[in-house]
Image (tube, rainbow, N blue to C red; front, side, top):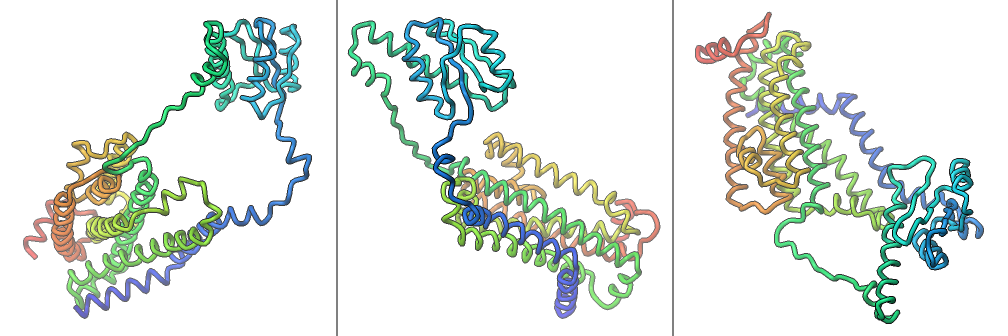
Length: 415
């Protein structure tokens, strides 16, 4: 236990002395501070607009040709109410003149009415966010329905009541609201993905560096492999947790300081209104998932003869983790987080940290399923940790080409 504590302290000091680790943490905290304080900063630097600027909200001119209809004034008034950002003007009868004004920029767009229910829309460059035709369709449809009811003998008041009828509804969710939980689930899964890959690679690189410098041979003679492996992995886990707490803790603190300035932003609110029990589950699955991959990355690092071999040696493990991440992401975007594949992934140790947490956040999962997944994870962490320590012990003496799995297993049996 004393050896484990010594190694743990030594590895933690190395992380906190690492300029890249400290620098990345400071940069992330600074970026979050800028983002969280951005609305407050913008409000402080905003100057009062002049009366002319406050009144003048028209961004362009819209031409309206009503040659093909009998009630041009009615259509013009309806368009003026629907398109408040435009100055709606009656256009000339000449289509070429209308086209020239739109092309030259004198008018942003034009509607040429052919009948009460048909028109031609003129615009110079059609934007993918141009919804003018959808608005015009609704306006003309309402006018046509109104006139049809008036012509059938219905009074104007009754026709207006029919047109303005509002449908009321209430939605009662008996489970989880996926739309509300999607954003913070995505952020947490992505954070888990990045931290496991980043720190897993760091564990493998540190082990390979010690081996290539022959420092591991000295260490293995004075400390047990289990103490060394568990000390390195737990130190990297603590470093990752500290970094996550610093980043997310700063975000929560700065959000609460500027909460009034973020009112109305449902996306930001949904992220920071994450329930406490989900944070607890996220911490549990993060730690257990991190241990599994960190132990395997550490074992891979002990088998590599050079630091340059780490990326090649760890590629199968990285692809396995990325495959699990992609399954979870596709299930989230499809809204089907309780599919058969996701249920299976919820109990496989290599994918359950992401899959089960996603199901907990975006669906209703029985507690016994969560408990089974956690128990399987804990057992897997212990088993993989002990097995990785044995590989670590054997890998110290293996130099030259990367050994095959069969040779490693034989060496473990003999040890």
